[in-house]
Length: 447
Ligand code: ZN
Image (cartoon, rainbow, N blue to C red):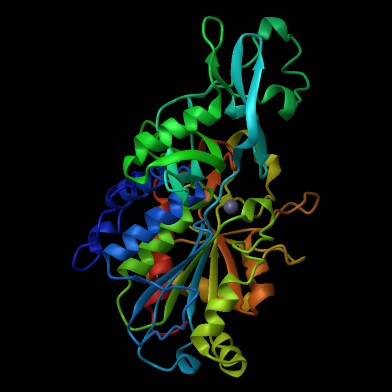
């Protein structure tokens, strides 16, 4: 598997405190993480390179003070933490939460669709995809496959075709004159990527191509068959700085790999002796109800095992804070009316605190004030958002984790446009501004 080499921080970590030095690492992470599995592998590799060791969920744990540890679930969710020297019941745990998944098109188990002289791939829509921007893009395919080797052993591997192998062409405007009046997209009929021409040859089908790719990418594995997979399409265009003055950053999966990366760097760079923990869950975009998702027991079980018993866990949680980081809707200049006039976060304006009286966000006045203090100490501007009262509110892992674990939580996020498009936009300065305040959370003496 190809994973990006993430830059290490300098002796003081200072060289990554501006966007010019912070963003190249983020962009490498975005480009190298086309699936949640790849995102977790990238994070795991960066953590291991800086001394984090893997914990086996199937064995008894004994994690000593000062130790740095990580654990994964389903290879698509990750928890990593550094234990401080003091008793947890006095210090509590500072937690950053984010999610590894992004809305996309996932291949169906029997994907081959043969019609009109071409071989196409049937896909399922994963999460709340903004479908229109998936048309006319040079798409590739990546994710996890499970198969057997020559000895009949079952094994799972990550694959990434890395080159454009499918596309979903639009219907020409001449054949659809009304398209700009009232567009609907039928995902079963219209969102079917084209893989190859069948006119002058017979293709064995995608399964065979998949085995060939696994053998090319993992020759040492001796894989003979692939029976199952979790594969998604992704746009091959890499992350890019955009704007005449370079004010913006465009990429796939900014929601929410931007937050995963800011949290990861904070964990890697944080000095001091606080007990700090990063949790990155899969399945947020489909409601978080899974063993690896925020509604599942992953974080709770890790905290329980760290604390030893229910009494200690309750005491530790009473002194802990979760900063749940997931991108926020910035004000779009072409759609100003979509925001409440008093709550219009701007790109490059810094992290956004999310409020919702109906608890779609877990922020309360105490946790919001704590986050504002962290921003002030980090010298980072802070914004806030509440939805228009006549519009529904989204949600995130913050309230779900808070409900499952019982930890005080503030929901925040970097401002972005075009959320759930395969090409999203954030401010060039926003990732490092989020990083600076998350790192302050991990380093500060007081909350
Ligand atoms: Zn998100």
